[in-house]
Amino acid sequence: MAFMLHLAATPALAASSMDYKLQIDGQLVKPPCTPQFPATMPINLGQVSRSDLSASRSATTEVHLSFECAPGSRVILKLLPGSGQLAPQILSTSLPQLGLQILVSGIYLNLGNVSPSLDTALSMLADGTSIGLILRVKPVLLGAALPSTGAFTATLLMEMSYQ
Image 1 (spheres, rainbow, N blue to C red):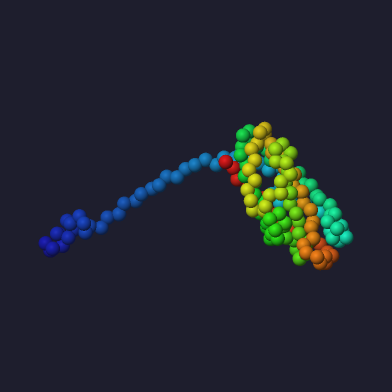
Image 2: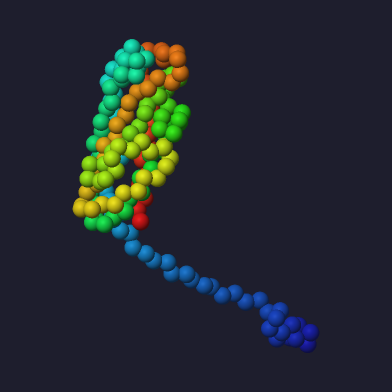
């Protein structure tokens, strides 16, 4: 009996438990820039002539993209090849010999016409309350052989982050 009392009285061997609670809080805020177009945006290039494609005369389609921003917002934009990439500025399509060249220019920015490599960050500063971009998409022939006729698709993803 004395042995049992001795063990119970030894602090190093006594079993104890304590509960700790970590209180976590934060605030969800609106991002500094909001796209003014749908999350999934269809872009129809229409009918592309194989003869125009082979002569590098296929039409370029312009897509206007606008963002409402807090003044002074820095936006980092990345264009990501959702359907594959064939060259730094060429998005692959569902037709093997057909690619899409991507060109971006700024409406309210001093970007000029830039052809960013896909998956490369493009940094922009909102001077006023909006950022306007023009995305130019042009079908291009890949290699010497013409692609088969038919419908084609491609996916371009846009990732925005803020500083």
